[in-house]
Image (cartoon, rainbow, N blue to C red; front, side, top):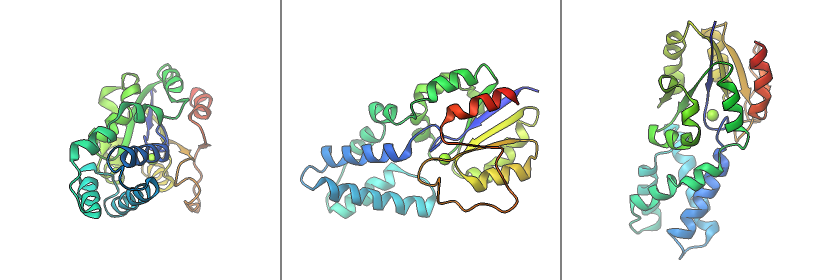
Length: 219
Ligand SMILES: [Mg+2]
């Protein structure tokens, strides 16, 4: 059976904390030099947290609206967009081992993505590794938990290896498709805040993507 390795983006391939830090720093420096860096970074963080709590994703258009309102002046959407999609910022926040590991994963099976977020944003994050991914196996959804059953069903002829930092999603995957191998990427902001789930253990826990490779090779 051919292996299909499905990877999450944030906190699995991409260091989201690093990204937000660099993005908010750049916003403070380039868009609001009249205010203190700390004040702007804190404001950006508050708006971001609010969006994640209500919609589960970061939308730079909504972010710009709220940012303008809080500053009481118009901030142009394209100015925010140029920083949100800044290639240097994005490139610098991919976890350092990812490119090499993915290249080796392509020798073991088909490699794809299952991610939650805005398509343009998530695509930008994986741009530098996109050519290592199977174009038909890139699933970017507004709500991953709702979409996952269909994705699993669609790929039932593969041996699926599912890697994510979201423990309850791994649990759901295991319940839906028992034969799926689930690997917990235990890093990023949620790594230590997730409560253990009674009766459930991921097949493997990793803190860096290279730790998954020998395990996947042996399956
Ligand atoms: Mg994630």
